[in-house]
Image (tube, rainbow, N blue to C red; front, side, top):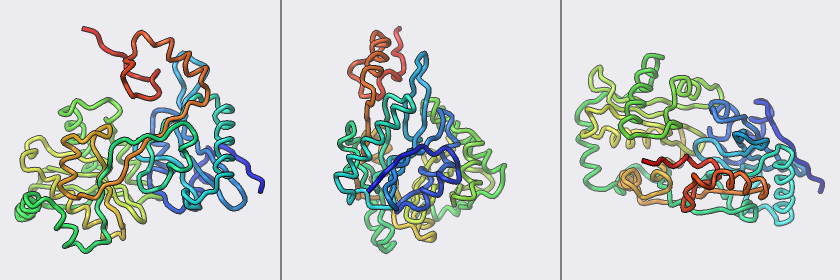
Length: 347
């Protein structure tokens, strides 16, 4: 059967493919990609008969170079399809690989990095295109289980703390005004300052508004108040099968009270109300089993592999860029592409 490939750069065509895919969420949509500030949203599409594979990407200019590279959006990306990716036959995988190489050459892109979606079997398709690597594990709750069984998997001390937090009569509500979004944005930025977060984690007010006001998405900003004071909140990404805490924050003076524990339990209830089957809690920073990972593991012992995909399509150009910066790079770093590694500081 004949096949072809092309790049989509318009909302109508982009979202038409997303809506036809078996599994998708906010991370795959045109709207979510337009909120980025790194580069140009591009959807690579491989089509054969009635079937397709679509790969959402961000095309970035490489400084002091004629070339570009592509990356996934912040979150979980990788290919989606109207077929189960694990069922795609080998000959079609080979055609997809050839088509993607042609796309990369045409777009003058020399490599791709993507964080893969843990609930879409993407590794079979991509394993022969560069490399798929494990990036630790990620945690989720199975919301198809009765709520009593879900909570029985909580750490016993955690469940006692949640019950105590519920007895405090905090107000839990969905944001309804611009003022509430601004208050959450300010609290979120203070959290990032306290954590000395990288600049790319400082999402602004327009970013949050963009996610909440999209007609295609049913996202929610859930806030917890102690009287009139905002003490905790989370922006939830909601799809037909999955809910996730995309970004959250807690007021400095309430850190020890840990209202985020109450919020996490509340998100699981919201997920059940909207019909989601999975509450994806995520993992640690950079795939590590750090304090964030430990916090999430107290809610569930159900884990799934977290994976990343790296592919160099133009080795000569890639190696020349690495060579130009070789003196200031850490050769032991796993950062990809390595030429985008932040310059090491010397004291």
